[in-house]
Amino acid sequence: MTVDEARKEAKRILGAAATGNDPAAERKSARSELTIRELVELYEREGTSHLKPLTAKYTLGRIRNHIVPLLGSLKVSDLRIADIKRFITQVAQGASARDVKGKPRSRVIVKGGPGAAAKAARDLSALMSFAVEREMIPYNPCFKVEKPAFRERQRFLEPDEITRLLAAADRLQAEGVNPKVAQIVKLWLYTGCRHREISGLRWSEVDFARDQLVLDETKTGRSIRPLIPQASELLASIEREPPSPYVFPAERGDGHYDGTKRHWKTLLAYAGLNQDGVERVVPHTLRHTMGSMSASAGESAPMVGAILGHANLRSTQRYIHLQRDAIAQSATRVGAVFASTPAVTARDDE
Image 1 (spheres, helix red, strand yellow):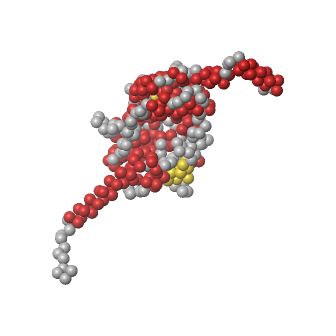
Image 2: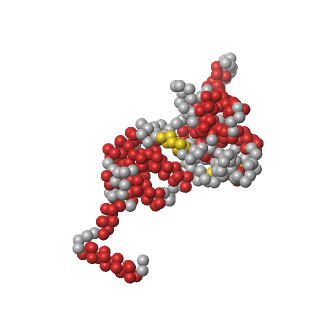
Image 3: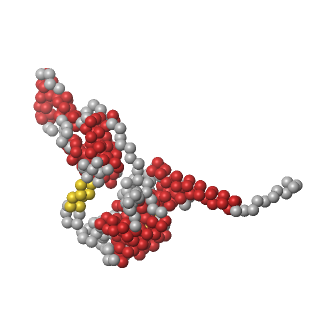
C-alpha cells in the first residue's frame, strides 16, 4: 500500500467511525460468518504451523474426512452443543465412512467407529479453539461436550500367533505374491515401527553399522530405533533397486510400495487370525506385540519407549502391566521349586 492509499484508507475508516460504524466489529462479524469448511482452509494456512508435518497431514486428513462432510456447511458461529453431540454419534455409527476408488491402483478408505469419533471430537475442538483465537467466536462449544470414551486397542500376538503369522507371510510369497508384502509384515513385527515408517523406509535411514534405523520423519519427529538381529538380517537380504531411495520402491512411479493392505485379509486367513469372538488384528497390532514382548522380557519403561520411539513415558505405560505379569509368573515358578523341595529340618543347636 502506498502512502496515498494509506491516507485514503485512514479517511475511510475515520469517516465510517464518525457515522457510527465500527470497522473492526464488521471485520469480526465477517469472520464469524465463515462456514466450518472455510474455517478449515484458514486453519490449514494459519493454524497448523506448531504441528509436525506428518501430524498436520493426518490431522487435516481426519478433519476433511469427518468434520467437513458432516458439519462443513454450518456457520462457525452457529455450531451448537447439540450439533457436536450429533456429529460424534454420526462418526461413531459410520456416517462419514467411505471406500472410494480413486486414481488407478489407489482408493480412499475412511473408517468410522468409536475410535474415529474420539479423534474427530478432539480435532473439532482444536479447530474451534483456533476460531476463538481468531476472535470469530467467544468460546469453544466443544469444552461443554463430554468427549467419547475410547479404550485404545491393546491386542497383541501370542507366541503361537506370531509363528502362524510368519508362516502365512512365507506362504503368500511362495504363492507368487510380491515378496515386499512378506518383508514389510515381518519388519512391522521385528521393529515395532508404525505402518508408514516401514513401507516408506529409505536406505539412508538404515544404519547397518550400528544396527539401527534413523528415521527422519515420524509422528514424534526424528527417531532412532534399535534393530533386533532378525530385522538386521532381513534388511541385509533385500536387494536395492536404484535409483529409488526406498527400501520398498513402488512397482510403478517414484513412490514407495503400498500394496500390503491388499493382501492383509488373506494373510490373516492363512494365519487363522481375526476369527469370530477374537479382537481384530490390524498392522498396528504388530507394534503392540513388540511393545508387549519387550516389557515381558523385563525391559524398563524407558527402554520399551526407546524401542518403539515414544516421545513420552505416558505412551509406554500401557505395556508396563505386562512386565509386572512376567515378574509375577517368574515368582510363581520360583514358588513351585520351593514347593517341590523336601522340607529341611532345623538343627537342634540353631
